Image 1 (cartoon, one colour):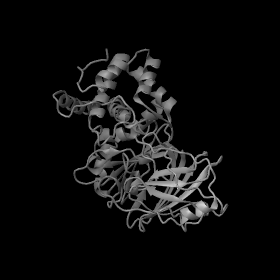
Image 2: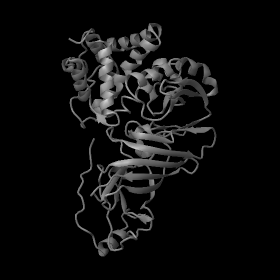
Image 3: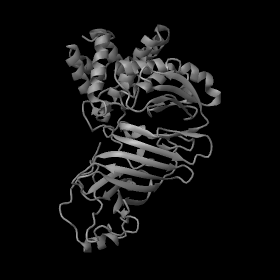
Image 4: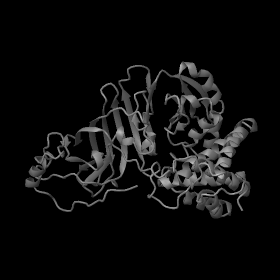
Length: 452
């Protein structure tokens, strides 16, 4: 992803500069435009810095008024800037405590917020008040009551950083729903990508699926007419989540999890990994494998973030494989075999030239996942078949060990597909590089069978 150039401020600006900036009338007004009250002789002008680490994002959202407040904790830094993506948000004020801060809306269509902040050896808490509007193209707050911001539309909901490697903790409060309930996590306690922070409003019934061995409560939230589909689709969700916790490592995002039915529209299908309450299209609520797929993102994609969009297969290919792998163990062949058969039909279509492509581009930060065509079924299907070929080569237990070791080492951080391959080689003694290149880095489709 492109990054704004950072030029740290090294000189203190005097009162006359503060006066000029405050009266410039160029969109830099922070509240009333006054310089910080703590030192009237010094002002920190807006400066772009998308690298300033965000420690926590706390959101208080009013659905009725279509306003919100973001309270963002910045890590200590010598930088005097902080920047966020703001999409279509209307910024009404930025302050540090009671002190207004200077800011400017920059970039194409003013979609980036640049703030001037003092350097600090302690965390800084910046408050941003804003208005938001509805977006019904899977790119913000939908009029139907849900948010959907993947891959980089979080700026239409809150001041954010959408790069997949970026992570922050979250605290959410959503009020003002006209009807029904707003379902969302009050806290996401460990670093998570921006698209994970979400809410959904509806008349939901909670289907309790029980607890895992670790004590995590698992459920499905559905509408009254969807009870049968929820029961079918969620039949193996608790056991699958238990498998993930026991085999891969502790879950990081809370002690209650589950699937929420999302009214995405008649033609929508699939899910979105808004942990701990991931969303499934209402039309997919009876699909057992999609429940497990979205649950597994708690480990791959969310628990371990991807370093760049080129590593998309590390998230989607891994969990596509795991949705079959887990069901094969906890539900048996009668449930798992049709899941794999569907993937095999997709691969056959790719082999014949329909929809084929590269699953793992050999770069980082150069690919736009939507514009450059990486968001297809290729990373899902080819990724799943790579892991199946690898399992056939090194054995199921060895692959489980490698995935658990990788998760234990990288949980809460961003990693790339190459990091996982290195862990597989380390723990199994088999170098999967050539097999990964054949399955993931080429437009051709290898023959089925174990890795060589």
